[in-house]
Image 1 (cartoon, rainbow, N blue to C red):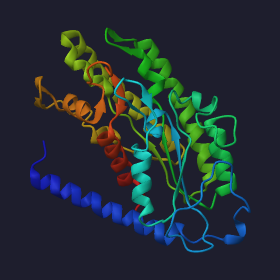
Image 2: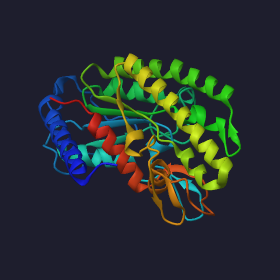
Image 3: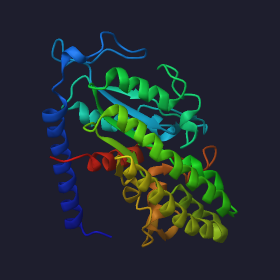
Image 4: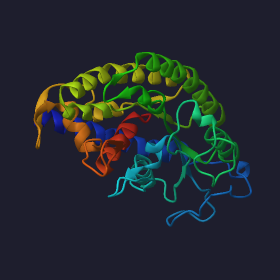
Length: 315
């Protein structure tokens, strides 16, 4: 575990990267050819907030992905709902400090996988036959107004392969092949429409299955095995994004996903750091009526946002 001085230095580096990113937005993304902007607003657009210069074009942050992109969290009865406390909201608040009036375009939603992103859209407020089609259409009509794109995909392609009783390796292999095949194509379509200068960030996965550690010896066995699965998933995701000129954000490290050093978890004694972290940052260790819910909590979403901000291009 890092010593306090190490932690301070790491936090300082993160702050410097954040400041550099804000400067990049100011110097590179703000100038716009007004003559090239579309005459009307797209369906689902909302008016810009205060602080925008008269006549300035609205800026957009476009997000795609699964339920994490929608900020989903459970209510007190265990029912999942989209919230405004997700990583997209935290990133938008950060960027909005330098880009007043920045608007979020949230296309992500529950159940979306690397293959299902071409299925029915999660957000019907924007035109298009699928989430990816919506994004391509929006970029076509707002190309010089979009300042950032984020995507989180891959988890839903393999999470159904993991159960409290074990992991179906054949299912995992098929899921990873699907991720590899689809994510590169998705990234390439987004890059082609967004152009070379707009940052596109894909997000790696954390390992929610470390929560099974609390379920006895069988659960601990599944938790240990899931570490290898998430390593393979993140390698596949990162490789696919790289081929499409999409930057990868390392959310796994923020959750200490591969940290097996022992630490203390209240009520459970000594556990791997990865277990403690997943219980702190997600709903996966909850008792009834919530139970095992792999969505991040508000603290966890902020950690994902920090991973994205740290991955943004520097100048």
